[in-house]
Image (cartoon, rainbow, N blue to C red):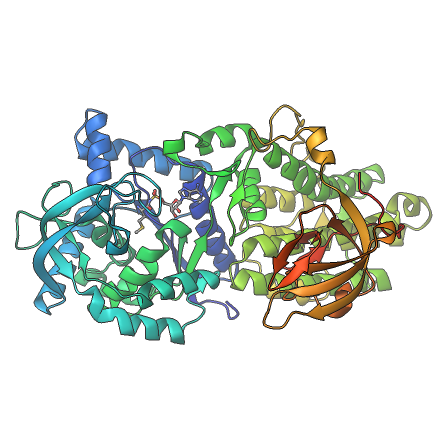
Length: 630
Ligand code: MSP
C-alpha cells in the first residue's frame, strides 16, 4: 500500500441472480469499491471485478418457478445488479457473467488441464446437498434423515450420482503449510483459525460435477455431466482477467494474483480451502488476501431472502442517496462482527456524523466567510501554534488511518477520521472566528484557512466512501481531488489558496421517529428493568486466577453491601492498573456462580471500544460505594 503506482486487483463474490440484490450484496460490493478507490487515490492501477454466478440448481429452480428459461431469467436479473451498482457509484472495471462464452470455455480448458494431470477422477457421490448454499454437507453432518444445512439452516436433499472428483485431499498438507506461512491471509485473522481447524480435521475429495441437473457448464469429454457451480464460479476470478485466452496472457500475468477477494463469512470455506487448492493444482499463485465480513442483521436475525426481511438497496437509495448509505455500511458495520441495521440507525448516523460533524463544519466555514466577504482564503505566511498543533494532529491521524486501511479495517479507519473531525470542530469553536473577524482580519483568515486545509485533507480520505459528496465539498472550497498526491497533501506545509462558494448543506438532517423498534419484540417493561440491581463499587484488589488467561478476580467494595468477590474476563483488555482503585458499574443481584472454581458474586459491566478492546462502565464523578444505578 505504501509506494505509489502498484497494481491492485480486487473482487466481490459473484452474486446469485436468483433474486434482486439486497443490502448484504451491496455491503460486499461497497467494501470492494472502497478498497479499489483507496488504491486509486494512491495512483495505483486498479482492476475491480464483480458479476453474477448464473449456473446451478438454485438458479434453475428459480427460473422454473418464474416460468422462464434459465438463460432468460438470469439475463433479466443480472441487469438488476448492474442497475443497483450504478446507483451506488460502484466503479467496477468489468462485470463478469458465468454464462459468458469466454468464462465457459476457460473453465472447460481448466478442467481439461486438471483431468490431464490426474487431479480429477470419476467415481460416485452420495450425500446431502444444500441447494441454497450449493454445497455438499460433509459426512460428519450426515444423518439418517435430511439434516439442516450447517451454514444456512435449510433442509438438505439427498444426492446420489456418478460424479467427477477433484483430489482435494491431496492438498491438505500444502494448504496447512500455506496458512502457517501466511497468517495474514484472512482479515480478520481469527476467521483463519476456523478454516485451519476444518482442514486439520481431514479433507475429502470434492465432487465437482452433477448428472442430475443440466443448467451448468458442460463437463469436457462427458456429456452426461455439468460442472459443479462452485468449481465454475470460483474461476471467475481468473477468467475475468483473461485466463484461458492466449491473446490476453499478458493482461492475465499483470493482474494475477488477486490482491483482495471480498466476501461474507458464509463463503469463506470455498475461498480459503477449495480456491487455493484449485490454484495450486493449476500452478497459479494464490490470492494475497481474503477480506471476510460478518452479517448485516435485522434485529437479531441475519438479513436473508428466505426470512423475508431483506432491505432493497434501491429503496434506501431513494430515501437517503448513495453516499450516506455507503458511509453507513462502512462506518457502522464492523468488519469482524455481525451488525444489526435499522432505518433509525441510518438516520442517526447521517444526522450526527454527516449533517452535524462534517456538514455543519463546512456550512459554518462558508457562511462565516461569506458574512465577512471573504471568498478567497490565501494561506498565511506563518501559522500560529494552534494551527501547527492541528496539522500535527492531522498527520498523526493519517498515520493511524493508513494502518487501519492497509488491514482493511475500514470501520476503524473512519472512526479515526471522525475523531479528527471532532478535533477540527473543537479548534474552530475555541478560536471563535466570528469574534475575531471584526478585530483581526489576518487571524480570521488564518483560522478559516486552517479549517479549509483540514477539511480538504479529510475529503481526500473520505472520498473512497463518499466520492460524490467529497467532490462537491471540494468544489465548495474551490479545489479538486483530481490527480492529488495524498502524501504531499497531508505532510507538506499548508499553502493552498481556497476560493469558497456558498452552497446548500451537503447532507440532509432526518427526523427521528420513536415508532420503529430497533429490535423487534425485544422491549422490556420498566418493571423488568428494575429487577436488575446495578450498583457502583470500587475495585480494591485485582488478582490473577491460576490457569486462566482471561479472568481476573476482583475484590469490590460496595459500601453498605460489603466487599464482594467478582470474576471478570477482561484480563486480555485491561491491566491491573487500569482497574485498581476505579469505580465501576456492576450487576449486584446476579445469582452467584462458580467460574474456574471461584465463586463470582456479581458482574462487571464493560463495553467494546473501536479497537475491539473492552472498557469498564463507570460513573462521571465519584459516588458513594454501593450507589444504585437508576
Ligand atoms: N454465488 C456465491 C458466491 C460465489 S463467489 C465465487 C454467493 N452468492 S450470494 O449472492 O448468495 O452472496 C454473495 C455475498 O453476499 C456473500 O459474500 C454473502 O456473504 C453476502 N451476503 C448475503 N447476505 C448477507 C447479509 N445479510 N449480510 C452481509 N452479507 C451477506 O454466495
